[in-house]
Image (tube, rainbow, N blue to C red; front, side, top):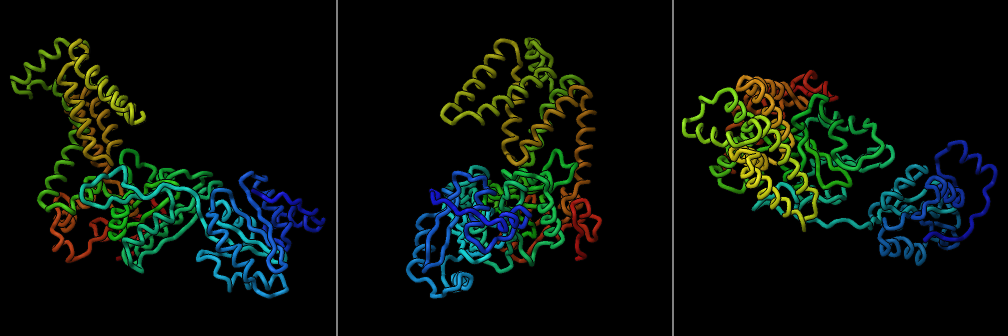
Length: 519
């Protein structure tokens, strides 16, 4: 805990210097410690430990629970007490301590109060000396955090079992361990006026477009938020304003996926406090690719990718298509199927359009309840959904069996592409309303509008629907619907800058804050 020793009264000159707004550290230990207490409102977790080293008055300022106590004793107190430099002058003594004593590998000099407080709250120990107008911030972080574990999303069978955690420096180290290249560069910055959240921007200097890197860093520096609690807070500032249905930023908690995206010329963002990293620019086709695709045989990976494409389309369109056919185009059903549907709807209490809307809302309620409930009682949601809403609602004549089957099937299809579940959920509702109101004409009109909106989008100069629109035949053949064997994939590198439609001038990137280089 903090030292109970009463600090002496400050001189009038010292008080005037502090009140004048001068943020630089004074050459007086008592003044510096008192100002730190004032800036941090004498918080209970602020610890100031006074001690003496060969007659020089010193202090170590830390935050409780943020540092390693063993490192504090071994790296700071023991060297300064057992073998201090034999110098009488305070400033020369402290300068000698900074330059000669191997206190810690992460050691930075501090000259102002704002930086001093930021280092303290980041898990550093700040060493001050009476007579020296600067401090030493020593990195001995020891706060509790979750250990590296298997990622909870993007589950794979044969890929890595390591996932990002909430500590940004640990995540950066996991990336560096997988990419042992001097071209991997990380830029550490703080975002958020109050939270001062650490954010690391990662990219390969020989792969990434520097105009995209500069655009991303400029946007991060100008984010007007007080608090950054996760990477999701940054997404809306890094995307275009018209990015509503489909996100232009890819999120992952897998270091292997993150590294592979960097190798394709993208920019990665790791945010302290969240296990999900951001990658941009993002392409629509990437949502249907998993790491397991590169561990299976090429033909099997191609089959799975096609299944995911069809699952996404079915999850979004199938309920609306069913409503449109039942209400406006029943002649398109086969005779036997039409008779079964007719007999089921005769006993239902609501029209097909109303049934689909009700079942859609009930399904989303069950999904949300199962997601938020504790795991010990989460199975109760599936029991309620299967028995009450499924079987009993059909037996009671409230819903028809085909509608229950359609909604359940589309729910399963949307889970096949988890990255697009939010988009699929909204599209499903839009297609149900369009199909129930205008039939197949409404389905077609909505589909065309969405398709053209997707084709018109670009993220940092890269077309969102590439390599399909505009067509990049080389990329489609190599690694989209199907993928080549590793022997062929290793022949040449393919980056996002080589896609057709990539902005060659500044016009494609002005909307996102940067100009593209001429390639």
